[in-house]
Image (cartoon, rainbow, N blue to C red):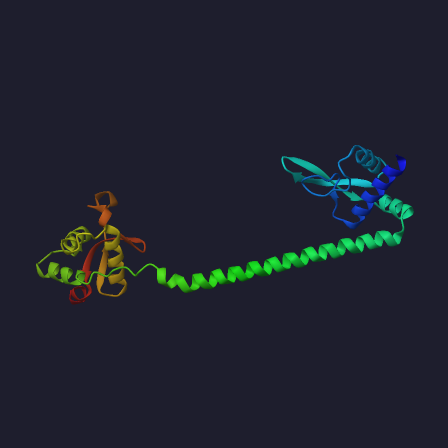
Length: 231
């Protein structure tokens, strides 16, 4: 029994030597460990801790529970080298390094495949995005004419936006307030109309849904640019 416990102990110390970051004390369904989950191995594990050959370095999740992760101590390494051939320990360490190298190569290959996939997705999106980009706002070309007619009819003020909206709806019954605002911004940016601010108190603003925020001002009137220049 003593020889079996010693062999279990040496096997565990050899694994710990090859895994400087540590391994769970006991193996199981969640992954490998320093000791198998047997009664004899538990005795060997207890001895390893009692003798100071292994020390706990933390825990790792194992389903709903946690497993204690242990690392080899200097005392444990000395004991291992005394009981086994240093050559064997070094060979085990080299095998562990080679295994890690193979895992690293696999990770690098997986990362390259992922990068290739991401590049392909990026190229597809770059090709298709212009085709699904939202269209530019419709610019209602009749607005300058309506504003010119408004001024020609002898109006004493620039055309209020609710009135302009109502007149546009006569020929564009499906026009929404949002589309109306987008069109006004486009006409304003193109220099075809002027948008004028509301200068009274906000609580007195008639039909505020038609008002338009332009910069830091609330636009409530519009005029044709040519008419404004003439004035």
